[in-house]
Image 1 (cartoon, one colour):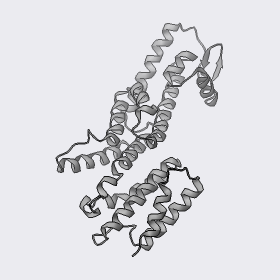
Image 2: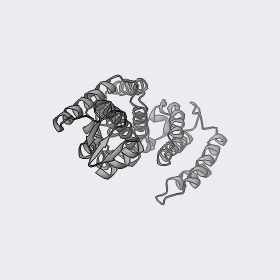
Image 3: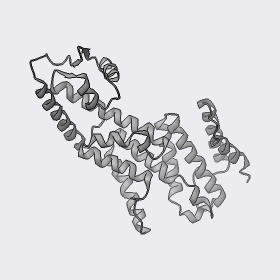
Image 4: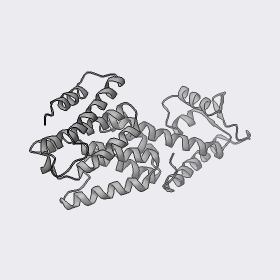
Length: 275
């Protein structure tokens, strides 16, 4: 059975020239139709190696493009469709297929997605499966940049080391551009939790302090964030409407900032409600 149509579609999807979201969606739909025609959407031991490799490549391409289209649900579906393919040994895919596999990247992105959702149970289930698999091969996961990235972030979240998480999500700290999308979501959830704790900890905060506490780039960003949450920004301070202003000193404010961090550390260790 000819695979030329599917190969052509995958080549179009992987072109360096940017495609419109509509074109990508149309091509991915056509690719799935071709997979059905080839009876390759679900792999079997009798699936020819070249079709098996092309089907895996197609689904991995769809998964990565879903990230760029900011469609996490679509990415999750592609990941789930890829799991049966990842159960086959690399020898099933032919001589050169293992070098072209995007498994580590796709799996690392899925782990990062689970972090953004606060699904730590699923995170560790996937991670433990990988560790068992690699141990059977006499290898570890430490040298895999795509897997080690979410593992480090999860550890720092549990420690409450949000500054390290923030630094790792900078452009130069992510292993590929696809990871940047989920990293931004993760920082957003951390920022929202710190903001919620801040509202309870004290009635107001200097904008300069809030910029550092919330991991925002500028004081203008602090004002925009404050307005979105219904806070009041005036005279160089942020006022939280849930509290009445009192006569706290600057030292009191800094102490309160430390209490907020302690609160968020305790929150992250609950392993359940990061978002």
